[in-house]
Length: 155
Image (cartoon, rainbow, N blue to C red; front, top):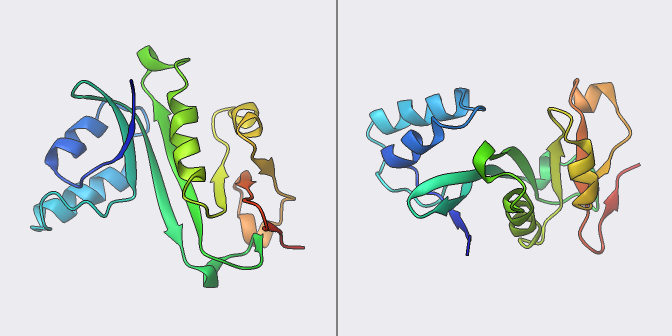
């Protein structure tokens, strides 16, 4: 059975990322950090993934944001920003994206994400809701949020 695990920051993880379509600046900056002799196998990373045997088949980036930057939730609090949720084409429709999102929800903090590539229905199905767009806050993004019990949206 597939399970979610926190990915280590090392050269193997970086190589695994190259197979995903959304391979970009975050991974390249991670490579630069590794090349600058960051501690190998750092396990305090924002990356989570699902392996099929030894192949990374699904991943997400989940960044914890300090409450002082919270412009979405009431009361203001630490929250997660979910980026780069991606499942390899051969593994789609196996609920791996759902498994990753449920893992993030299980951490108990509100979550903000941005719907990309027509994924609005996925986020709604996962219990996220779109926020009323505010140009000065959202800066062209298409934010969706998930609210744990006891949390609501700021006015």
